[in-house]
Image (cartoon, rainbow, N blue to C red):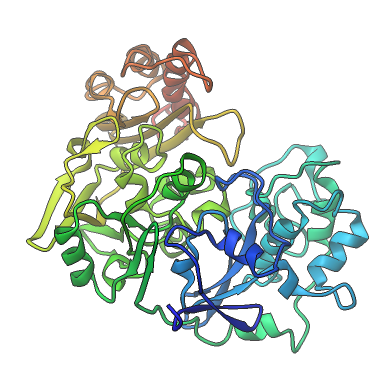
Length: 495
């Protein structure tokens, strides 16, 4: 273990005396970097945020904010991390830290280091100052910023959603927003800005043996598949945004953790004439950036999936692999008629996502198989939407999620695919509703008839997030919202 280590704030620290399940947060605090805090231990509050040097799409480095409470520190072997202490000092604060102090955004200070790291990630985003941000969202008149009808982006191009995974505990968000919108461009000679032009650290094969288990980052996909074949009790981890919660809050341990999120074979993204293949180990933020709107239904999903801190680590393969009935990617992918590519040491096979889930957190995937990729057939439906019902608009778990995709032929519904989450033991296709839609004109009457059926799909239950009655009601409104948002020609036919 003396040969593995992490570069933190420009200094290499060996990983000595750590266990296979030690989080980056606990390790950082153990070496005296106590700026990052544990607030929730499940990636919701952002108090533990740090910056990780990740590859960008052009051979350079992207400073990426992640939740240190969920990342096994062994997964950072050979990587570069910057904490709030590495941004600046009391004598020479970083621009982000200085603006927070000037605007009164530090408040009690507990969550401020996490805010500073997330804010720094957006501060260093390539193209940010030039206004290269996500599509602005409409806002009420009182929410305009300097006359711009967009409450989510500042005049300096700062995307306020970069902070949506950081929860403030004190006096409010206005001072924090003011600090973010006061940021200029990085100055010449800024070391973190200059670092972006050089490649991110290479991924290194890692082996850590501890008293509570082993952590292995295989050098190849073949090695990973061999380990899975030989050790069926191993836990395969990628972004660890789900497994990390089990480790922190439920005390779960695995005899062997196999890290696969940086295997090249699982990080491909191919846009072909017949379909799109998305590598299972690409982080959702990477998928969103690289698709660049090529799959509009997924473009609607991504901003509603947890927070940027989570999306910077979470993967499509992990979301489908956990088989949670409230995983947000499944309803959208079901509406897209996606197929799952499973791979083992014995070879590959392809499964329709609608046939993939077999029970609560159970699938057809064997213990020796990995999800290698997800395939989406083309062409895509012309009418689509992703609806998510949750107690918060962002950074929350779904009570109900609905993916909708309709094909029209001269105003008549030629095909309908509806994926549902949160209403059964597994994500499901709303087959009965689809049957009602196909062959009928896309009119308000059709939408109402189908909505009455959609409200009866699945077996919704009552829990602390929503009642069964509320879930059924929200299902029924999804189609009505879709119809209301469908552009119509002057003749009343969908455009």
